[in-house]
Length: 180
Image 1: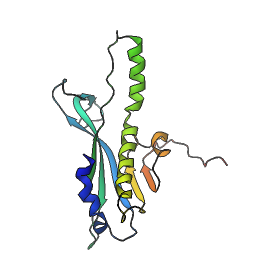
Image 2: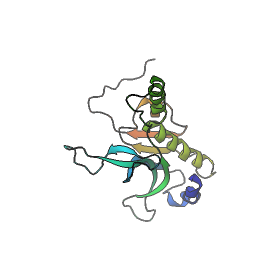
Image 3: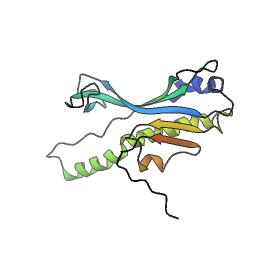
Image 4: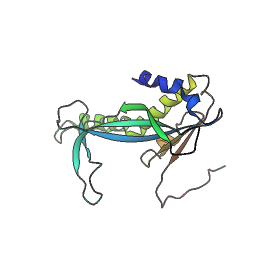
């Protein structure tokens, strides 16, 4: 399915402002609501349209989306978002309470493998590989913007080369310089 977005990457140099301009993408997860529980990959999740003071749950399919941000080269203005990745990221299936202890241990391992930050990192890496496969965009810097669920060490320590991640963090976070 990633090959469906190749025409966007092929025409990307013409969409950017200058020959040395960085490639800017936005990363986020989305929930496609479903009504049935028996659809493969469907799970319970927080309804994004529910108010913050009353959390509603709904069935849905979880996807990680990466959109390329391009602005007009003729006049300054708002950027347009062109989707370049839409990856299925289902959560791990939780076993029943009375299931065997081996199933609960397997669930814990699978939950770590299917975590949302890892799906986001896979999408960022895939976009970087698509840029590197083209001569015009291979050396450009990739700047990725994401929300707080992706701003953690699993993502930040494993970014591909020539990639910068900009993310939101808690307001009470303590920032320190790295040790010598």
